[in-house]
Image (cartoon, rainbow, N blue to C red; front, side, top):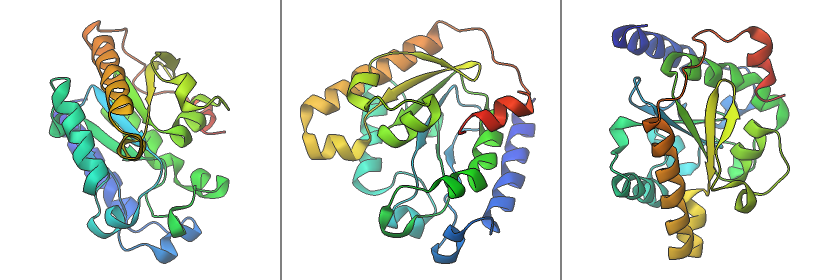
Length: 208
């Protein structure tokens, strides 16, 4: 798939998502938070669901959390336009609660397609929710971080959510830097590419 093909497929997918009414979350949204960044990215971040500012602006990780994420990327030699950032669900859950299973099920097809189109070498999960969901574990992020996990023909590197670093200070910030350095090192090793078109059982198993 060429870069132009990726860009067009993402554009069409975003257009579809912007009109989505598959679950109750569409009732309270201001805008769909589809994703942001390079459609050719080797590194993709996955967060949980949009918060208030993201819902208002239509972009993931804005405000203080977004500023910190940009700073962390700079520390490992990357910039935000070089990566791609998406969410498990594209509409804001009321009161910033965790997305519910039926909401995730209704929305997961968009994330599956984003992963297929972008085809990143490494996925960084931000925080407990997306880490537990993608890796199907009940182990907390403190124990999961700092390691590389094979997943869906790719590699996952879990790390803290930027909001946790803002709450807990420099120690967590440095751990996040270490995790991002690990993610970059995996990319630099050029692991075997994942299949371009995973089978349907693999797709539906992602969040089951």
